[in-house]
Length: 182
Image (cartoon, rainbow, N blue to C red; front, top):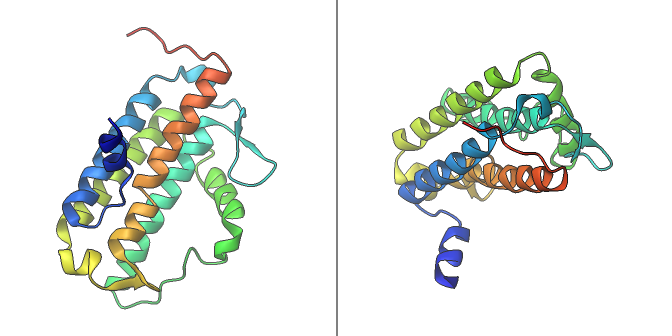
């Protein structure tokens, strides 16, 4: 049991491990997203990404999509030889709460089912990106500072998927949210 726990907590260090980690964490998240009654997705009852704020499940999905889109943007700009601003134009790494708020606003007018579909498509594009890259490019050279591309992808897709699953499960338990029967 403890060996399995250690394995699931390991940071991916290869293309295969990264793809598996993304698929596994997204699959678990997706099942949890599907289980949320739609009349609860806009309730601001979950601790937000900025200190002292509350967010909804809709905001959480917007956050995940925002980061996933940034990953694709970073790679697209890098591959075209254009400068990449990390984490995003107008934001520093110490302003991630404000960036989260931007993501919430970016997708505020998108309905929850559509937002989830966009997240799923984004995850598929990230997996396609991983599959299209070489092991060398993913893990043997820096992409941002000392971080290889594979680590940047993991930090902004797979890890947040896992974190979001934990948040959703705590929220459902705290607020006694019961999944609709299939």
